[in-house]
Length: 166
Ligand SMILES: CC(C)(COP(=O)(O)OP(=O)(O)OC[C@H]1O[C@@H](n2cnc3c(N)ncnc32)[C@H](O)[C@@H]1OP(=O)(O)O)[C@@H](O)C(=O)NCCC(=O)NCCS
Image 1 (spheres, rainbow, N blue to C red):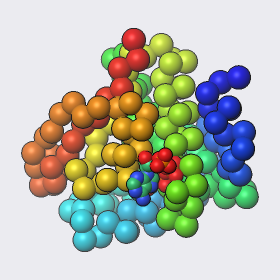
Image 2: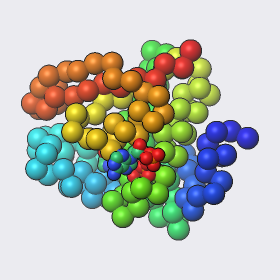
Image 3: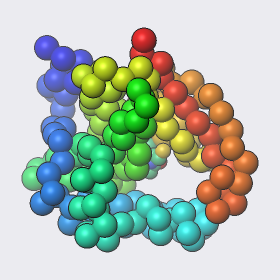
Image 4: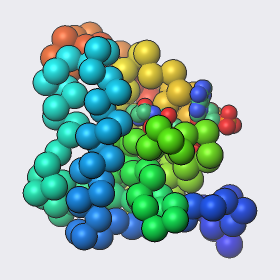
């Protein structure tokens, strides 16, 4: 049994690879989640994380997305971008109504598993220093801070986290 299946077996949500027909729900989820950051994110950053349904379809052709499904609705999503022997975690988001239920953990586990399945050497991501819930989530899985970029996204400082697997 994989780590992902084992940890998920008691949970009411399931994680699966996203399909193109999920684009509408994923786009709506990103809109809701990043609207929460209206005052904390520069406008350009917030908008760049809120793809239209069409743009979401394009993103899904370029990288692999996993969704957490709860009662037939998408409650969480994460992207996995494979490049130069690594997997970049992108656009992790869980619906506010379902935070603290283990969905972010399940998505992180699936992303790590996907990285291993593809023979990549590490998983990495960027996040803003004030995103404490996200940082705690990644640290729980052994990610460590590996970089800090000043004024990296429209003036916002960003931190980088990595989990080296091999
Ligand atoms: C960060 C986020 C994805 C976590 O998702 P979640 O489903 O609520 O997380 P889980 O319930 O699976 O919790 C997993 C771990 O995350 C951390 N975490 C989650 N909520 C937290 C909170 N309110 N405070 C501190 N740590 C928290 C903890 O380490 C937790 O492990 P624990 O339960 O053993 O303490 C979610 O809060 C979210 O979507 N936030 C807004 C968008 C965002 O920050 N995206 C990430 C961008 S890099």
